[in-house]
Image (cartoon, rainbow, N blue to C red; front, side, top):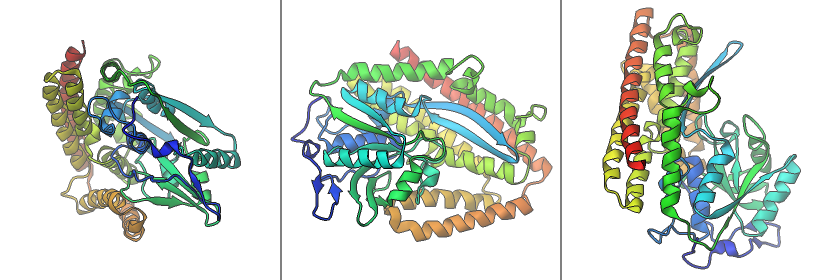
Length: 419
């Protein structure tokens, strides 16, 4: 892997007389997909460039090299609590996704695990002092700002100010962010996050075989979409089969996991509809379950592989992305005022964070208060009657089946190019 110039990460981090450790010149912020953007920002800071352009890797290319988009469908229940999870990127372990990308582009990834907050903080300060910005896995629900909606979340640490209780981090916002040491420690050990996991990257001198890296990502994507993932009893929860499963459960009143029973009209159904909307539209920038984002990767892949037919397949994924967007809109019909308001506020919260970072805290707090009011209102008086709920679920089923048909055709066309 070659470098554009002497990388600032080749110098040690600066340590001030007051004990502030800061990686000099770090100015890489923002992105669309949490993991790919974190990796892109670290590589760009290090001066790493892609062989085919001489410019920093795009996050879309990195995302596709890791396998790109995917589909998974799961519901969960514990007592009165129910939840819905839609996987919109390829399913692999949290570190495996970034590790695969690093290995394929010729970077040398090192995964760190520690058993305590004190040890994790010590490792963080050591990495910063070496001028190496670590990628950290965190629980997005524990962050003091909007994180990834129901999914893996990573951020980059580039500074540490112990005396003022600040850790400087880069996330999907265009603005620099700070967390307190306690906030970061809590986010690194709560939820489904494996405690205190970090990724350090050491670029290698040898340029990567970019054609091979792209083909590996394409193969992974096609295989999972067509064959599923995991043991036989779980395979139907992934890939194209997951769309069929979701469609069937939307209107199945006999299955205990069918939506009529699992998400009855009221707060459970509202939460499922709002969560599905957020996971489709607000898990990252661009919305539409990352399908247009993946289409951008396919265009770049076509240029690398010198095959213009990838542009046509990219158009198919953009078309399926439009269907995903329309599904997101239909989940919370705009004919119901509180549903329409929920969509508007949820998306505004994401875009405010992306543009203003912590500067939007007041506005975001107001939005969260209003969303909580809406949920209470819906819990007391659900705005759809029984027949209207049936009509809504039937419409959603048809839309999911239409997405299945479009995705099946697009995956088949891509598989033909990969073969």
